[in-house]
Length: 251
Image (cartoon, rainbow, N blue to C red):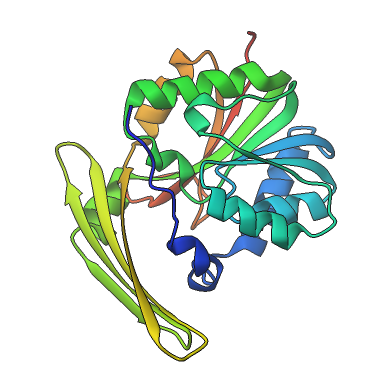
């Protein structure tokens, strides 16, 4: 079983470097999807919650939130951001997560499922989700497609300079394995104006919509719909990020 990278150094500057992610728009989209399927309140689990940016937004929308992440550093920041809000954060690997009971819905945002590199392990994640959902509960999640890695970010270098931190993001895509390796070099400015250098390596696997449908079926879940997150239309072969809604289908 492959271990995930823990985001140990990246956690320090994650929110600053992810400020271009449209969390408000995504939160509105996810909230509308939950309501569309009859879930306007109740217990919802955010799988791969990171620093809790989406978890907090869904909590403000009226949901009782549980956040699960494998990184202690990310969860520390999530708890600090949560303040007095009653969000339960659990440090767990999504491939082996355990809840105290069932929930009305699960969500997973910002390509967290792409960190699961083997199809059988991702199928197991879907089985766990199905197990912890209320009858006819839903799972709403997004993923990066093989097209995005092959045609957009694979084998590219992205660099950005900020006031207090900078990063170099080098991508290497293996088309045969559908796995994208990205090496992060992060420079964080300290109180003495000196910069500290951190390096991390992360692996993500691209998936197709067809592969996702097959894994959901094997896990016993019912595929409900898929949406291109950039166009909010039906996915195409050129879709880069796709959101899927799947339903619980028995235990």
